[in-house]
Image 1 (cartoon, one colour):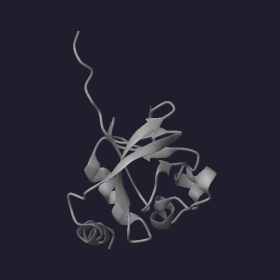
Image 2 (image 1 turned 180 degrees about the vertical axis):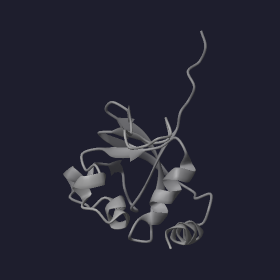
Image 3 (image 1 turned 45 degrees about the vertical axis):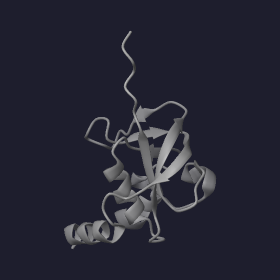
Length: 123
């Protein structure tokens, strides 16, 4: 019997979370709504949370958090894990009902550097 591959999942969001809940339950504006220029109901799903197996992608979302104090979390997804239908790279972004935070993880790239790069691409 072959062992199953161990997959780690990450989420970038605000500080001090113990559980990741969708914006429809918390009432919080989704991070992408601050940048997308659209109402949260157009491009931003509010009834799901989004996680990734790539910590660098989670870093981008943590760095984008409007508080300026975003955190990358190692999480355990709860509910059915499904592909993000808006993501063109299979397996990069996944959605589920919620997640339990295992622990925060250290950024690989400083958040200020991530924000600088993102703003360069926008301007």
